[in-house]
Image (cartoon, rainbow, N blue to C red):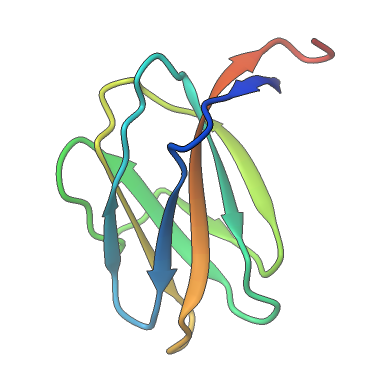
Amino acid sequence: MSILSYTPGTAVVVNATGSSQPGTIAMADNDGMHIANTSTTLYVQVRWGVGNQTAVTTDLGIPPMSQVLVRANKTITGVAAIGSAAGPTAVIFTPVILGAQGS
């Protein structure tokens, strides 16, 4: 899986702390999300779905200075992140259009 295109201006930054921090996202015609953990030391747990989200139960854990690419439904409107310590650390959720591997 690779990124065909980004949708500029739609990235959402959630400043994760030791408690869940929510954010809203507009997926438009995107079918994936690029999620980046900018911390050099903290792990983050993230969650996404329809409506307000809480990262108390999570979809995915991301190590420090790492990023992931996930398939995501166009109906997603909410994201959340929680850090492994107080932080804050910026977690960047970017809607993307996905292509096949090697595209």
